[in-house]
Image 1 (cartoon, rainbow, N blue to C red):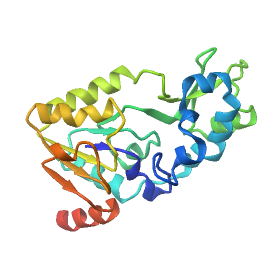
Image 2 (image 1 turned 135 degrees about the vertical axis):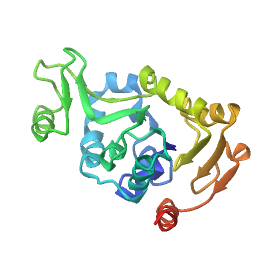
Image 3 (image 1 turned 30 degrees about the vertical axis):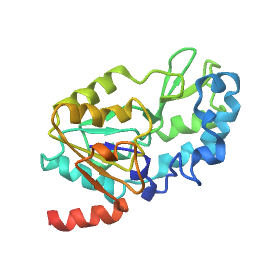
Length: 227
């Protein structure tokens, strides 16, 4: 399974590309690594207003369904473009977080690691205005434009895609590469492709099944079937 921002919208986390999404409000450059380095304060203000909301969000029905399907042995691997860590909190264990995790921050000077599962470390970042105890800038462990994806996570995702017999893309626009290449790898190696999302994607023409549906409605139908 590959998931995108649409999976976390029912948890109160805004998507990125819709008319009311993050990019419409802040501009795509908010996640540009060069913009961050030249003006980190702008990103830190955005983090306080938006990213830290993710820390209080709870998994929704969609996250829970995917975790249940893993427990039943149906889902062998979960690839997510989301940075909110809600899949892990829902109980999924075989996860490739190819765009990183907003709950982990690192100092760019001394490499100190801040894990925001710990409220004291979250408070330390806020009190110090996102500066490390050494005075260095801190950055969330997420992939900015201009940065490489984490090689180990993407290699795992690639391996799962190539070996899959069924590849399901949920709540993703399939316009961001290299993530959007993964369903293509799966199809090239004989897998069936199912896309579940509202709106068109560039890969609809190669899907074996396209389901235009609200993800919560789709999940409720699946839960009724499983029960």
